[in-house]
Picture 1 (cartoon, helix red, strand yellow):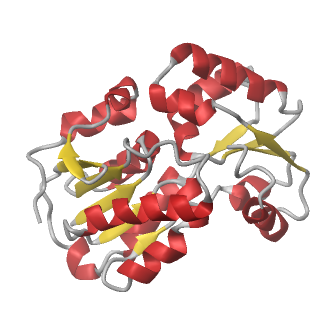
Picture 2: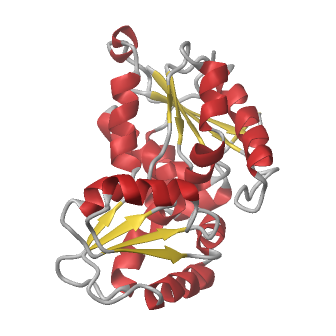
Picture 3: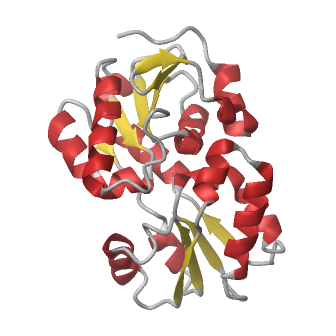
Length: 261
């Protein structure tokens, strides 16, 4: 079984590590765009163009499913990627975990990029899944870029700024950008590790959904646990910052020879 994951950079690591934990034998294809990152400031049409290029690069290696492990790309490019690749390759998007976070009734905080915060997409999720809960949207400017660079000082500063904008008493925190899941322990610590606070990411649910969407014959097929990295369409190594996080080191440690078409 072979599964591809797509992001502008290292935001795909959390979902890739979750897939590796569920199916250590799965061959993984990580397709990212170091030449075009960051995607956040780009127009929706430009995000779609870059995400499609990454998706096409991965599709050439014939994965059994493609995970769009990026909230920005899921908002702007998911329909276009599905229109091009499905039904041959199932495409799984990433949705912020608003529904499980709101199940407890709130208060709920949603940390997301400035582009996602207040967007029609996020407001739609809140209206559909959290209408009965108290929800606060917290923009986190610079946090995804800080995580992408593994810039320790910038991570500390942007997390602290988001904490300052998060009301006391929040019971559930939605990590609305895949990059944030890589520093979830630092986020919890910066919030003072309050008792009863639950952090909700998307990686585990996305990994489970990806395996659910793979055809039964592919699920039954044993893989070699390989790792192939595509950097703006070119075969290469993981981005250097990936190894600053446990998820990136795990993928490197468990990988065998690169998967081939």
